[in-house]
Length: 342
Image (cartoon, rainbow, N blue to C red):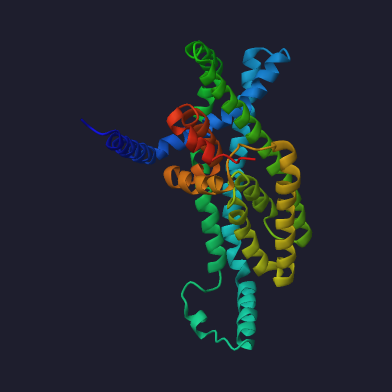
């Protein structure tokens, strides 16, 4: 007869193997799964607007058409703007060549004044004029590659939004005998929708103030860097610093070190003001995840789903926590451990 301790170990190993298989499966279909999940969370944001329009007396077809047309137009505008701006930036790179040379010369002179020779630095193939800005553009385009899937995402979103009312009705019917699970679904949808909505307008307000700062300092492509700040506002912990890299490199080349320092302090100050002072007043306890979990969630979901995974890491983690971990006694302790606590 098998001992209880051996049974527990086998159950643990089976559970771990199941997790590995699930993660491997998600990673294998990440190309298709990413736009589906992005469209799903987009529906969570727009569906309350749809119901609000219906309550105001708009016919169903007009309410649906208004939401769909708005999302499609915004998506096409964002796609056109990003590709156009990045193309302009690439074409403008040669014009910064002299400024890059000047900044590098000043930097090497400063190193020499400290007794550090610049021969080894100059010999590095990557440390050449224009390479710094090319690196920033590569980072920008790589982390925004999810925009290329916007067409598929919008198509999936249209079908999801149209079928959302019937899905909600079927969910109530199928979970009518399990009110606790139904409450978890509703709580997840409500909290995630509220979080994404508030995060959107806070990110937009933060980006506008940052663009004003860049405009005052005379930094080129301020609107592009503001849009970058808005998108990476959804990536917790590291999003701020990723969005800061391209404009800061350009500021060093274009504005010099003094104005770059002013830009850096102002940029971080604006972001921290909205994150620390303004956001808690509206987000309350947020999505009830610890700081460590929010950081790890970005890394894990980005590895599984690619760039889109970083942007929807928090809602995905909350979905796993509320609908899977909290639903079973065996995993409730994990849900408690990853929560923010008091």
